[in-house]
Length: 191
Image (cartoon, rainbow, N blue to C red):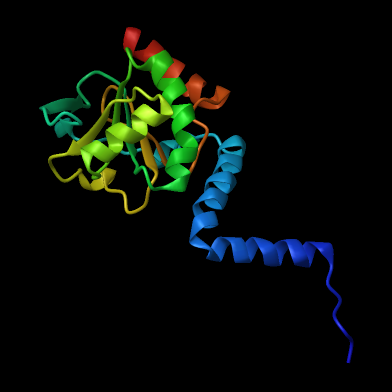
């Protein structure tokens, strides 16, 4: 019978597994892994046959101060929708890239970041991270085509309600590829 020896890669793997089991280090490791993922993945536009059109609707929302509002989807403005949470490592990993995108496109694209968390928790998180993202709680069930079972799930919808991007998992929204998609959306809207 051949005796197995410990190799450095086996030791590192074992340490990684142990750290994932310990609650205090699990979220730190998950965030680090997702930050690497963000660096590797940019959003991709859906193939034309996979792009579906939403019936225009008003998304009934509540902002973090408790004020009810509605944002029109499919009525002339491109929209970025993100389902996320403050406790979700992939969400946290991609938020810096969403913030950068929002800073550059927020006056031409409607950004809707949706969470069901306590508004005080969300406000504290945004303040700590220095984000000024438009975060809301939904006051209605999303249309079936925008129903997400996992977070983060993000959608980019054109001015006519066509879903161009449906991306799940941590993604680099500030990539050249994403910016090219947003630039094209804005050009089409200006015609």
